[in-house]
Image 1 (cartoon, helix red, strand yellow):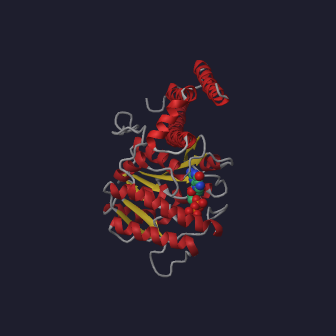
Image 2 (cartoon, helix red, strand yellow; image 1 turned 180 degrees about the vertical axis):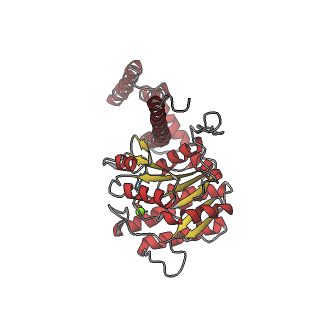
Image 3 (tube, helix red, strand yellow; image 1 turned 45 degrees about the horizontal axis):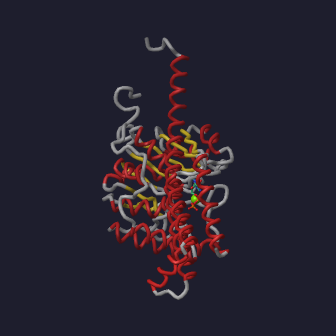
Length: 258
Length: 127
Ligand SMILES: Nc1nc2c(ncn2[C@@H]2O[C@H](COP(=O)(O)OP(=O)(O)O)[C@@H](O)[C@H]2O)c(=O)[nH]1
Ligand SMILES: [Mg+2]
């Protein structure tokens, strides 16, 4: 990462990821020297926060579990208040290869949000089957349509956002089911953000349990349809978005800049 | 006085006394108390003046007064539950916002403390 350009904050939502969070943080900083990493520990009962700190990350501790949406919004608010120009979302489980970051950040030249996407090219090693796959295809088709560009993996947790998108997310990042992926994209698109994707290869989980299971895939499909439908018809702006400064102050910039 | 009247009056009175006591102990916001109070008064009226319920039933062309009473009762309970669900959603959203804010502030406080510690450890470096 070049030393000029905007400051970049990588936000890592983590919930009980003590086995992989340390390695993930080290890999991110090794691949992108000078980048800052914020791990949002979402009420973990293991040593996630400690491992992240030892790996050199900033750690934000939520007092109880809020889900990915809550963790990410806390991260976006921190980024906004501390004057970061670009925010990145990377999973703590090591599935996302931080080597793609430079390329993804560069793609922000032409868009506000860049998704690191699976299924975007032939020979992609990542395979998903059954109802979970159908849900992904359906969501991708609908979102591609409203975004006006081809998106193949809208549930990807690997994303880069510029300051404009970060500002929208800091205010409106939803906490509901699939809100952190599908609805947040709908919100961004409806607020006029340009979304693009970059093909990436994802790895299998480094440790711990994936939140997917064959039985829950069907439930996932139905909830995905409901979540998407709701996201599309919801009145905008949301009534519940409270407690964010509408003209965000930048802490640490200006007089006492470090 | 029929036993139905006695039962109705008694029920309404119990609700009112409980309401008053809960308000007195600050266990109930007056927003909800008002609603319950209105319900209790309606129940009391219906018990004391049975003609009232009969008249309304006739007016609406419903066969049995009991049907009307049950219908209204279920409707009121349904609306109150809906209102509570909505209140609960708002509370959850607020506690979420607070939790996020607390987490960010805590990180900022820790960073500040570390900075000050570093300044204290190396006071004459750049003077
Ligand atoms: N903050 C937060 N993060 C979570 C929660 N559940 C999962 N995560 C994180 O979200 C990321 C993706 O989770 P994962 O289970 O791998 O989802 P998948 O990759 O979509 O199958 C990982 O970094 C998890 O630590 C949660 O409740 N809160
Ligand atoms: Mg994962």
